[in-house]
Length: 248
Image 1: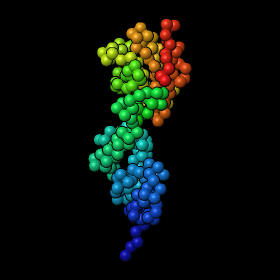
Image 2 (image 1 turned 30 degrees about the vertical axis):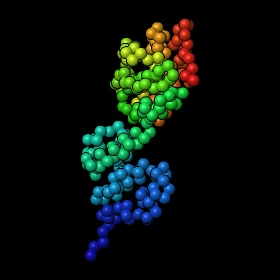
Image 3 (image 1 turned 90 degrees about the vertical axis):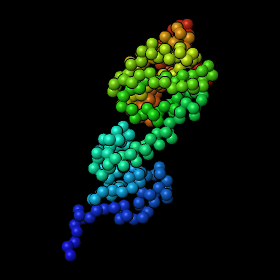
């Protein structure tokens, strides 16, 4: 009887030592110690002929540019990868969405804003993977309690339109006292651009006229953020009649 070559053997996770299998490693040392490929292999459960679930997971990560790439890929496109299909694509998307929801605090969970980090924690899970700039406002009452998070505009790739008319129309309608500006940088780098600073100053000055305080502008990147208030870039946009008060 001919002996199969190594290339003809279909490797499986069961061929691995028990202690090195992803599920057993997760049980023994916890999920944070596992690689992204190991975690995805647990979701996939099975591989295909010639590829274990672990090898299949690694190939998906490579094909789509890591976890961030998978999160930004549609379920339909993900399902076209060899060995995935609609069922496995749905499983992966469901797992990523659960992770996103666990990371993101909604306005109903965080009722009071005390510092820029509070805002970042509220939005970063939802905004870090977006492939276009989304401009939002956090609406606060006089006691810095979150009343709503409103999307004002969606830009194209690396630019976002935030016209004062659109921003303050929502604020006036809701009779809010203060707002915080928020937008994302799809590049992952939250460093404010000259355009970001300029629109911040423009909106802050419009807010002074309307009696609506623009407290801060938070720029979200890939699991990191920048606060224009913390960078000292907010007060430059205020008129001499009023400066931004402390949140605290």
